[in-house]
Image (cartoon, rainbow, N blue to C red; front, side, top):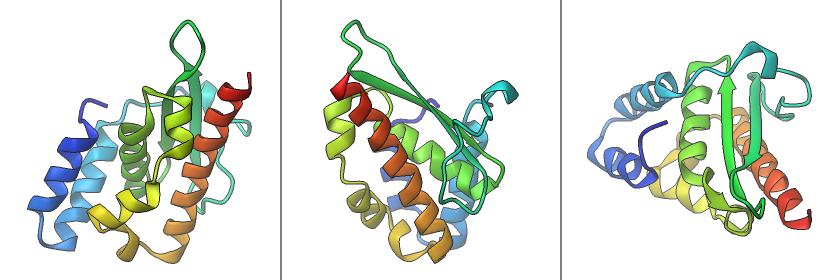
Length: 140
């Protein structure tokens, strides 16, 4: 994923119409690198999402505390939401991931009031999984 979180936030601010914002979320999902089928396992599946969502967390530095995320979904909009959260959290120290205010981000870009309750619950489940993965890195 090549877009920074800041550029995504700025792009959302330029879009007035929610149809345009949904199209933008789908576009972000299309830019997300494909996840190999071998990683689309039950162990990587995010529970609590209506759509199928897979998430892989890896540590990238010597102390094992910086977390990199990869993810995928079988639904276009959800794949875009995965892309947004990867932009927000991937490459951060595990402590930052755990403390990250995802709800604040959702409010800032307007997702909090424009997603169906099922999608909102799934998005929270994905964020919770990312935070759980990061917590495991802190404890290790």
